[in-house]
Every structure is written in C-alpha cells, then in structure tokens.
Amino acid sequence: MKLDGFEQMLVELAREVSYYLRKNGASYEDAEDIAQDALVKIIETSHVLPPDTMRAWLYKVAINQFRDLYRRKHRYAEILEVHFATFDEHVTAFEMENLEDAYVSRTLHLLKPNYTELLLLRYDETLSHEEIGFLLDMKLDTVNTTLYRARKAFKKIYLEVKENDEI
Image: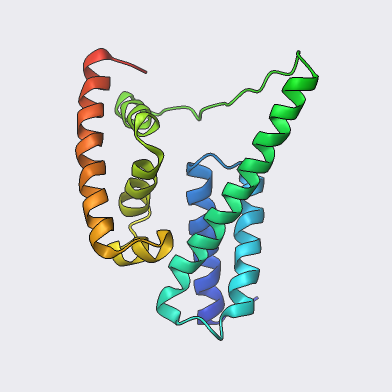
C-alpha cells in the first residue's frame, strides 16, 4: 500500500511516540494502542491543527493517555493489594547494555519526574524548546530555566551515582 506524504508523516510520528512511551515504562501493547488512539484523534482534528504543531500535539495527547492508563492500572493494583495479600506487583527494568547506560538510567530515576520528562523530551526525542513548551503548557523561558536546572541536577546526581556505584 502506497502512503501519501501526510500519511507517511503520521505513521513516523506514531512510531516515534510509541518508542517514547515504551522508554517511559509503557508496555509494547499499551504504547501501540495509545499511539493508535492519538493518531485517530489527530486525523479527526487535522483540518483544525496547524501542521507545525501536530508533532507536539500528538505527544501531548499520547502522554495524557499514558498518564490516565498508569493511574487506572495503579489504582487497580492498589485495590488488588488491599484485597489479596499475596498479590505481588513487579516492575521489571529492561536489560542494560553497559555500565554507563545503567548510571544514566539510575540518575534519571532519581531525578524529579518533571526533570526526567524534560530531559527525555529534549535529548532523547530531540524536541525543540518551543515544542516542549507547547507540549507541557509552559512558557519558553520556563522551559529554558527548568532544562538548565534539570541538567544541573542530572550532573550532580550522576556523579554521586557513579562515585557510589549505585546500580
């Protein structure tokens, strides 16, 4: 099946969003479902959205859906834990390829969640400061300041993790 330029762009964005969600803890199936739902929403509103904001808008929709799913699953796990004492919730981490990845992963885990989110959006997803601001409903100056603080905190925690060999 041959896709036109717009459809090809949407497919690439969906893959990108799915990858981002998986990196942030979503299962493969959940990430694919969320990306598909976000695509449906973007297709429904594509005539209203300016083309240059579609990427950030898709991320915003997907992240909100992921947060809703996480809250729902977390509430469900708490209910099961209260009613069934034998319930044991395991959060499995993906296998680390090398030691540096483990240090970075541990550092990201120890950072404030909003710092981690900002750093991943900026450096892993390579979103611009403007796109991050749109995505997170933040002013550009706030994005710049928070990213600066996040980098500074990351550096400090990373050095501590590496020094203490906390993995």
